[in-house]
Amino acid sequence: QVQLEESGGGLVQAGGSLRLSCAASGRTFSNYVMGWFRQAPGKEGEFVAAIKWSGGILYADSAKGRFTISRDNAKNTVYLQMNSLKPDDTAVYYCAADSNRALIRRTPQVYDYWGQGTQVTVSS
Image (cartoon, rainbow, N blue to C red; front, top):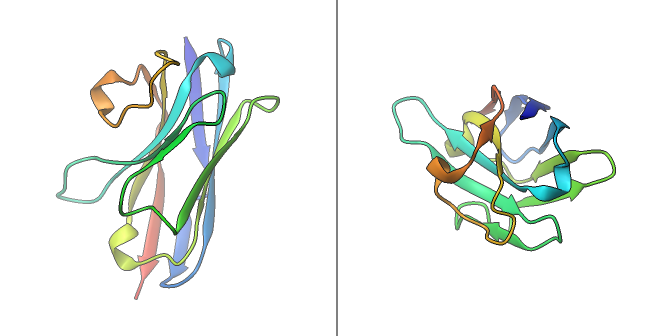
């Protein structure tokens, strides 16, 4: 079992930045691919970015060039640095863990563990 807890969300003006953190506890953090997803009101959940234990990374097109995912295996924490935020980035952001450490996958259904989410609101 892995417990995930996100933090760092909030209200920011368009063009601003936020850094989300996801602290993991339980089983060995390095065994998991860690991903970030988001869900805006009335919309489907959306893949944002994911990172393997060894550092391989995948971004959604909407995140490329603006968001940076990273992880600190010693701290059991994954981060999402979000720059140049837009109102369309407004959503609840979720951290998730995938036990298939060999692959980076976009499909939320394959992720085994999820956090409770943190709200990000970007005002225009």
